[in-house]
Image (cartoon, rainbow, N blue to C red; front, side, top):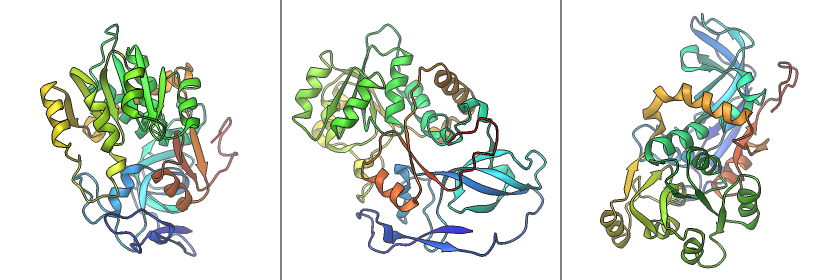
Length: 354
């Protein structure tokens, strides 16, 4: 049994996470026994996500996020297989997932905290339940549906920042599927820009590290911006908001450029940008996908259908080190979703793939 432990060395509220902030520990066996209502699971995949940086602070800035505790096992999205069960609705061999999965190779968990998943929904790609057919997919879909106010046939232009990331790469595709006539992505490399336009169907992509972003945005969005899926905040978002149309909408998904800074969430806009927002009646409401749990099941079915029909392209990168995977995600090294493989057994079920 291996456990991933959270430490604080060399971090602080404004620091960048490094490998020294964590420690791997080895135990002889899973502590304790399986009691009534519990299951023993073997971890297959773990998710690394930007919100985890907030959990490294004593005050996460969000009432729904509990901070990681020093010298305790880290948790996050995970998926695994049940090896022993004393829960009436879960059996040995079932695949289950949770938003609060401990970063351990094996664990004893309360069965009521787990959700059974059907591998057929992802054509056997179990790790997709942590990405496109999981929380990032639901965040993108429900965010666009609830806060984007897209109306098919209205010739709306959508801009996505952090567009090559786990949520951004899905949100742009979903914007098209729900009726946006033009979708433009903002990211940080030529490779990512090419990926967005050649593989995901974005109409244009802007590399914010090359050239003037405001000028590129005007060229890519000649009719202005109607919907902005904001993953990054900061200067990029200020530039986008300055070019948004009257009665347009911001989907406030994340603010990753601010996560290593000691600021409230969502961070306040600069006075000049806030004035533009108010004058143009631009909505910028805090979005928390956990407030829409009643939409999770139909959302998963919709995402699965689009995936199976080839309308929703899935991109993910697999790591075999939690430290490397987490650091790569926090520094923008990812295209699509990043997954850490803990245990991979291709004999688990017919047609199973990662």
